[in-house]
Length: 280
Image 1: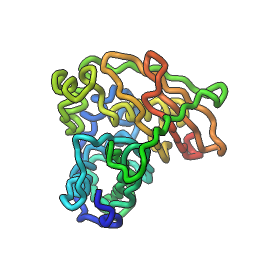
Image 2 (image 1 turned 180 degrees about the vertical axis):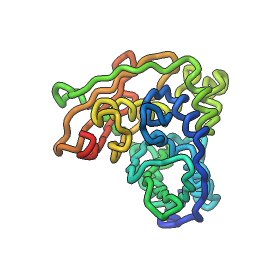
Image 3 (image 1 turned 120 degrees about the vertical axis):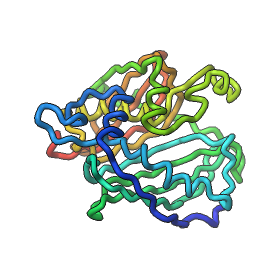
């Protein structure tokens, strides 16, 4: 990739949040939190990861930059780090700007990190995301395997949550998020890509994990989730369970987590969550 583009910024994109879009997304990730539906006297807010619905327009300007030279056939979504500054509400006018912040060698390839910063119509910061893409076989140095780190040595978890991805999860998520990549919808296309069949969206898995964190650590208050960062370690197969394990971190507001499939293999690793004091 063209490292001269590090630091390049792109014009902000805009998006209007609607109740319909927010609820459609919540249903697509199997949410039942009354705050996302304005029930039980709660003010209606969107799920924390709803920003993935409007990110692609801004993100596309960066990763689609012809000067960058990404080979998308070898690209994988490697990591996501999201900091939640304020709730997203229906009626918000969201402006999101993208900036390339790093291009680096990693293992047998390269990574590109893109920062996405969103504000509402009042100029208030809503959320900041660091999106990291891994491009296989593009490294300038000798290839070296980098094992995915697990969390098995952290002792007894403070929380364990089992969730189930429905057989039709990828179809519902595709409609709500706008991510209609064929490997999530077409079994033959997935097999041509070297996969066993249709796989779940990584950001859908992340949304499932966010529910586990909010319910177990923030008392069900989604505004209590201040940060969520992770590495995507392995695809999730629809129709199968996942289990998220959470450990106390080095600070009262910090937690480590890992999510595994039914075979006990990490699908999400190196997880870090920060919970606001008011929600703990």
